[in-house]
Image (tube, rainbow, N blue to C red; front, top):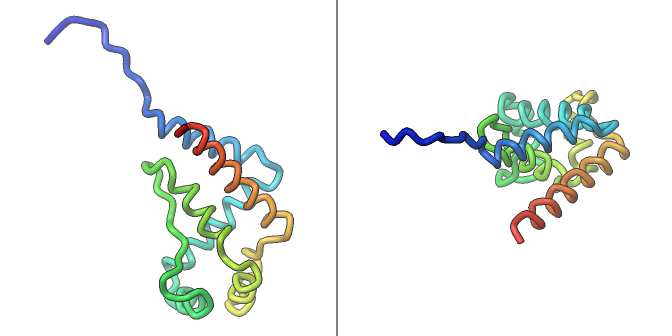
Length: 128
């Protein structure tokens, strides 16, 4: 093997994921939103009763993806999926299933939309 000095470069996508996650956590409502969205995704995937109620409102083709530590865009996909749901229908499902702690306030809903829109704009700028 050649004896040249090899510099290890960290994965650019993973670096972006860490920066985005840290940025979201710095938002006043960021960590609360992340927590609620994560718990909501877990409910959809782990509770047959909740999944049935969710699919009854949104259809069987809709879901909330789980995050994956090795996929840099999984957090964005999860946040985007929740932001695209009708907030009234989501609130109805959460109330019907007595999961009041996961209801998004209007401020949290607005922050979620802002996070998703900013991340879309950022990713568009980096591709161009």
